[in-house]
Length: 316
Length: 281
Image (cartoon, rainbow over the protein chains, first blue to last red):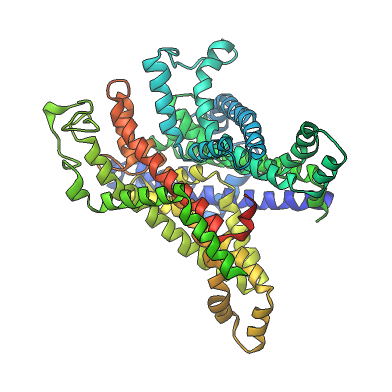
């Protein structure tokens, strides 16, 4: 286990380093340097102003030195400050994080609650009409763009039915009931594709396990079908589902940006989009770096969980 | 056995009504996009002030938007933009990812290096990486193509690399090399053809994701910009007037779902037909 752990940790550290290079380089690839974008036409006539600005942002130094300074500061938690508000990027991010984290957790929660039972049921009903309906439903769920699904839900529940007249976000601490009400539709939207993927994976994993020798042995011993399904098969079938959950985290973390835009939630996705439109590059850079790091950490956690659940992997 | 089993799987895919319906729907979409000049009732950009925000009617089946433009015509012309960007970006991803995947077969050092570089791209959630690329390059259709290609090239790298590594261990490769064939020649002539099936399956699946990402980028305002009609940019223009004119948002979304669903079903069908390991499903 420890060799596997070391290998995974090293690989993650290496990828994180690559991510930091990419994110650092990203802003330097912006057509027309940032300084010129910031200052606009006014500075073009004055090389002195331009030079002093470049010096101020450290852009006059060689790129590798800039990178080392930037990385060093980032490792100490200093991701620079917003060009617009002057607030530290990390503080801006942390301020918005609870909204996005709540959204992601709710989405993962409901997609597991729906996906695992549906997938299991689909496998039990293999080949029947109900199996067919669940499989078609899962394919449909994978094909719904989140922003459109969110739009349809808003139309249905807020505009036509009037069940949620106000979509104004309230913080969880201030009014838990109102907060959960406003988070319900966004979480539903964000989790749909994941629920569909988990349904598919649970089904095929369950079918795989049900064909194994030990299931036949259990049935031959006279174990009830119910116990075979839930005790013998499902527990083993869920292990591969964990790996899909890892991939799905990518769609959840990325989907946050889209869903927060549709439902105008004040999370990190909204922060990123606003920063992009306002060309607030330190914020763009910082949010992408932090979201990438969070995604990688979650992925690592999923891999380790998988290794803990499946002994073959850590010894293989 | 392979030849006959393969044909049997193809026949099964050909008999599946869902697969056939998906192929037909896709053909109809592509046909309507190519012939948009003939089939669209109006110009996609013709402003008609007296006809602003008209609901669906006989003269405007999908209604009109805030400039009185015909939504159906915009969706029909949007097929070119949305499917064109998806196609171009996946073509680029297949080319770049495929070549790099083949190169990984040149030796362990190259494989390790390329693998680490690809890991960096896999470290980002797909849509976030695309948004990041769009933030750097600025909004526009070209940006969307590059952004989606950057996201999916690593997927094709992995698929081709896996085929290359699996085939390299086969006896026939050893035989070809013993006969004096160079590594590059073996890669291209003997190993590459084996990667075709998995690449085709991956292409269908990635096309569905590409449509989703392009429309998401355009919906968010960092992809195709109005007035150019992409399905996502039509939705972007419709979102402010959702309660007033829901048809502007509903119909293009339906087009996205139709196209994505078609590619998903075709991808599943191709996987069943081309990938014997998927037999259990």
